[in-house]
Length: 313
Length: 191
Image 1 (cartoon, each protein chain N blue to C red):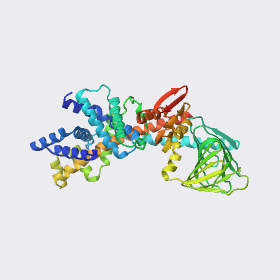
Image 2 (cartoon, chains in turn green, cyan):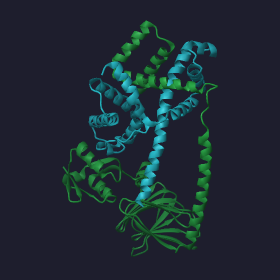
Image 3 (cartoon, one colour):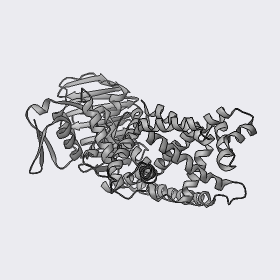
Image 4 (cartoon, rainbow over the protein chains, first blue to last red):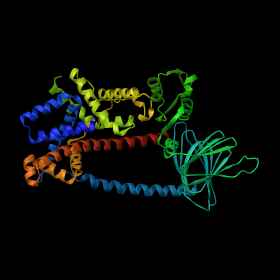
């Protein structure tokens, strides 16, 4: 019996009770209540709400109206907030005007950071990331030294937005995308719009690769693979922006590697356990919850070794 | 505890925790269609446990039941699909913080009720107003509105379900806003 069905029966009984029960109805209701605790708790829950609704009688004409303070206070807060915002953007403008064009942004392991560039484009840095950004009157250049970042670029034809990651160059053609660099391996996920990717190391010139919204590009050595991503795939690639790691049937070895980007304590998976495939979404910093799950859900052995957490079968 | 004692224990001690329980379930169970079922089954198990022995601390007791229920469900699935669960900090979490729900002041409760009332469909709202604010009986409401008593009865049933849902839902919203604010502060602290 679904909760919805039970709740409807409970509501029907209470409505009859509210109208006044005949003796036989009274007996039938008691029987229904005795039938299952599920019935009883659904009944009590609605009865409680209906009893509490008696307080509405306080709204009878002639009773004191509800105080209106809240909304006036709200306006004052809003006004104050506007003043603060105006002051804040004035200060930002002042500071941006004085900034040197090359800025370095860094996050520590487990950290994240949002940055607005002088041209209005926004970047979000994932864990353990270092990048340099240079915005001038004629160019916009970001160098991803390590880690991962998401870009929401303000389109400007006269100043292409270029991201360097390892030996790849990603040129934005008006878009939102993220770039992950792990050594020389680079992954570009395009949420919207289009980017062009060039291999800077190629011995002989190679054609650029175009990646459009809904696609991801994975570069390994000289190869570049462009693959369509489902909307879920795109959102799981970008889930780190909300502090989540999302896996879809990935091996435990890969999963551990992802966790290790975010945490000081290292997750080490040994032996056959490395091949177990799992899916699900996890808070990137909840390594204890995750290993507890591996233990309870999969019966894996979890032990400590120095600063490492070792998982084995 | 006898049956009647457990009834009032359930209404006074357990039901005020509904929004916290719902959030707890939502946080850890991905399929939102299951939440109402899980909540009701948690209530039933809590009620039955209280018939045997009244628990000391209600919130950890309730969350423990919900947690066991979710673990049971996962274990019963033939293929372990982690997709069903949103996150796993519940495996070792013990939420024993002070309950915000309990401390909602009477005035605020009235405001929540009033908002819930305002959001009822027009006819349903009219019936509830006459019944609860003007204090008319169902029969009198039917006569006043020129509709059948059965119709009034149906509207009363509908009204109480919506009120129960809206009151808990809104409380949940207020507290989740507070939580989001805390998360925001945490993010800021990391930088």
